[in-house]
Image (tube, rainbow, N blue to C red; front, side, top):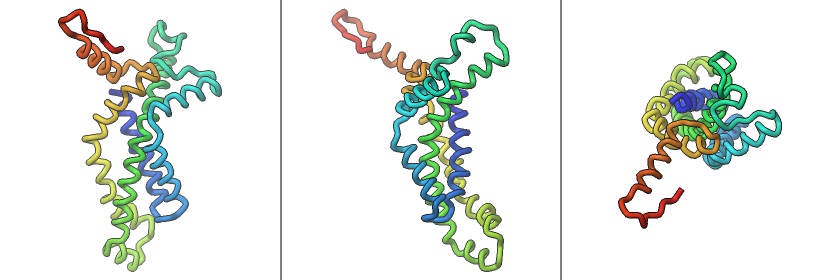
Length: 198
């Protein structure tokens, strides 16, 4: 649950600034936000997990997989052990949050560009309202609708999408538990001739 909630918060924290950066259509910021959006949608989560594990091990000599590192696996609870628990959770949240960020950037970009062409925005500009104040006061409020409306499908997506990422990173989240339950249900039969896949 902590990984899923952290992924949603990270998704929101990355989507809003990167989208506001690209508020002007066809600007450099718009191209950067669009590139991030398409990259997040195109690259599979398990591939990002494998790349993160590789670079974490080769560059930083840090094992990202698992819940605890070897030195803290059997140690008593302390601040160091709590920090050791946060590191793999943050990596998983970052991986899961990238795809959600990509979707929100695309939705918010469309909403904000649509709002910037509305008559009330043109009128406010003509009356001399400051550009940033105008954007943050009116169009951004309307464009923030996806933040509230996508929570309903984002949380199940993060939980179900964490199955593969949790398996790759060896995290004991609900994802591998659901997979083991599915395998156990598939393999449970009354005849000895039943063959299980594992």
